[in-house]
Image 1 (cartoon, rainbow, N blue to C red):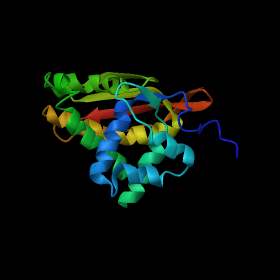
Image 2 (cartoon, one colour):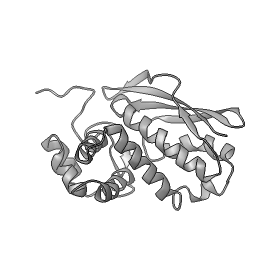
Image 3 (cartoon, rainbow, N blue to C red):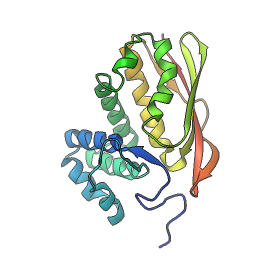
Length: 206
């Protein structure tokens, strides 16, 4: 069987993330999934994916990010949840954990209007692709855009943002945080034969 250009073999795509992403998934799955990370690896759909997931991940090293999509899908199946439900639960768990580490200094700024526009760029430092920006619409509403996101990762990325942002902003005192995607992901190019998209959000609170 010939692999589609938009679905390269695990470890072969040009889109990478820091090992933090996989290490966080391992820890969360060990807590949440019956059988933990080992069960997720065993449930992976191909031998190539199982081999990729069985390696030793180092926090600051770079790894192909696309395998996180089928791996999180396998974890969701083992939990009896939809893919979206488990990814969002994982993202909330990461947000709560990182508020005492990665985001501790950012949250010292305290005000939601200061923290919100910084979140897109801060989140992208885990990845070696794409760009991020945010624009103020009013004192309690910002628009944000992420560009160059690999299309196979788009849903996973959207679910992460939808769940992650409210947890962080509520920690700064924001109330009733709403994360909206006013438009669908729009094609913006390709890299290594994999199509990329731009993703837009509106973030508001009271």
